[in-house]
Amino acid sequence: MVEPILKTEHLCKRFGALSVADDVSIDLGPNEIHAMIGPNGAGKTSLIGLICGLLAPDSGQVFFEGADITAEKLTSRARLGIARTTQLTSLFPTATVLENMILAHEAATGRSTQYFGRVSDAALDEALAMLHEIGLNDRANTRAATLSHGEQRRLELAMALVTKPIVLILDEPMAGTSPDETQSLTKLLLSLKRRYAILLIEHDMEAVFALADRISVLVGGKIIASGLPEIVRTNADVQAAYLGREKEPEHA
Figure 1 (cartoon, rainbow, N blue to C red):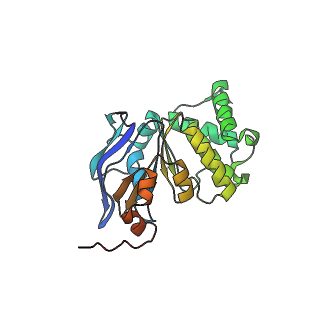
Figure 2 (cartoon, rainbow, N blue to C red; figure 1 turned 45 degrees about the horizontal axis):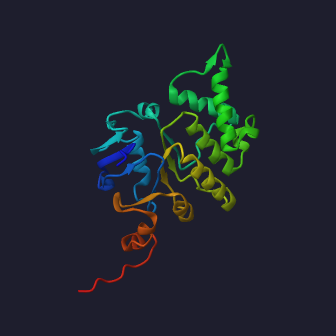
């Protein structure tokens, strides 16, 4: 059995009476897309915060490549190889596409790519190569604020990739995109699966079932189902809690 790159064990987190993580244990294997779905307020974004180091758990552990990283800070986890995109696009709007890439690289590594006011050739080459792969090479000198929404989502993904991650955590990458943009992003994520392990949080069920190798369903901070997409799709608890269908009554 292949060891998971990322896993959580019995993560718990409460804010007063509200439980956002209730004994959550999940794992992510190499070259796998593991989708996390659930209704609004289920605790998905809080779980990302626990994995990335934005939140400290009340109990439980987070492991990355076999090492316990529960006590590691956000920046340390990023430098280990955990990159994320956010639900709301987070860019430097007045900077160009290329400048956003350079800033993302510096923020993740903690090292300046500029020498005597000039960006190093190596950093430029890496940024431009990633923009080409993501389909934004012809927009390198365009201000981020003038990009379409779909292009902004691609740029945010490119900013995560330029940090050379091992794991990508994507928080609703399809949010606000048109059907054509969603289809294009789906193809892009499928191509990235060859090199990265991806934890995907997404509401677009068509995209989820097209992408996911496994699906876990989070409701009220608790995993209620986890497994292959075709099994999760037909799970009665999932249909009742997430798809709005009533469960069949149990017969004595």
